[in-house]
Amino acid sequence: MTTRNSNVINALGWLRLKIMDKIEKINNLKTKSPFKIFDIVIAAALITLAVLLIIFVPQKKGAYVEVYVDNKLVFKRSLNEDYETRISTNGGEHYNRIKIENGYVYVLDADCNDKFCINTGKTNTKNKPIICLPHNLKIEVIGSDDGDIVIY
Amino acid sequence: MKVKKLVYLAIFTSLSLILFLVENLFPPVFPFAPGTKIGLSNVILLFILIKYNYKEALIVLVIRCLLSAAFTGIFSIYYSLVSGLISATLMWVLYRFTFPKIGIAAISVSGAVIFNIVQLFLASILYKTFVFLYYLPWTVLVSFIAGSTVGLAIWLIIKFLPNKFLID
Image 1 (tube, each protein chain N blue to C red):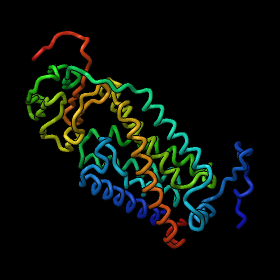
Image 2 (image 1 turned 90 degrees about the vertical axis):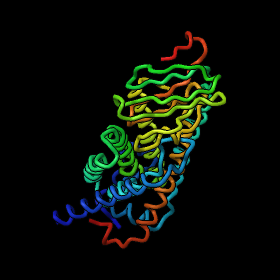
Image 3 (image 1 turned 45 degrees about the vertical axis):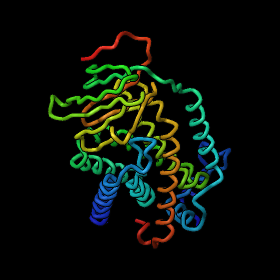
Image 4 (image 1 turned 90 degrees about the horizontal axis):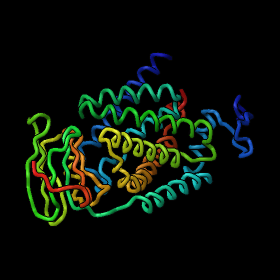
């Protein structure tokens, strides 16, 4: 099938890249495999990205937990002792119940609509926060080197 | 012809909205990477990129994001619109200029990866922290699975739909 675009060689001509038109592309999809040889480029890029991230993003245990509501610190406590608290958000309309247990912190219960914070699970790692988007709440684990325990 | 296209785009918008809502009903498929999902409405986006063009895909995407805000809250516009626009642009560029060399599955995978990475960066900006880097490797892995699923789905759709539904 000869069509108007079939002879166009674009800027990447050295790759022998021919721009197909719509019908040629649909016919290609209908008759050929969904995987092509240059998919290797994308797969290699992704694997490299993931490996680099795993190597270079530090995963250190923290000692303190900080809770922010609307980007303001409302709660800070050591991870070492078990504790349970209820944090009111959205000006007292809603809540998140947070529990510290065996050195981990997690959200026990919340009345948000997506339950994202509960599904995130436990954390004791510095780079792994728990967030609750509808309540604009952030639970972060920090290291031991910044200040005393403050209970608000 | 114009009315026909309008009706088709309206149907596609409602289809992608339905897929989006049905997906939200189920618990998360990948619990180790919070916030990620298969992205079934991406099937519709890719289908429109193949059947029509970039402009029509953007129209459907923007209307779907605005309508879905009525169900999931106003926050979702900020996330889904920005990352959706960027990933749709990337998929269009790949499909338009490199298609016979890069397959449909890989196009869908790159779209999913960019969508999720942009979403994590938007969350990092909103919460004024870059701690979300922790989730990135898992996000890439999940996007790989999700993107392949969507890519194979769209390939099967194109393969078995007769040409009269595919050519405008």
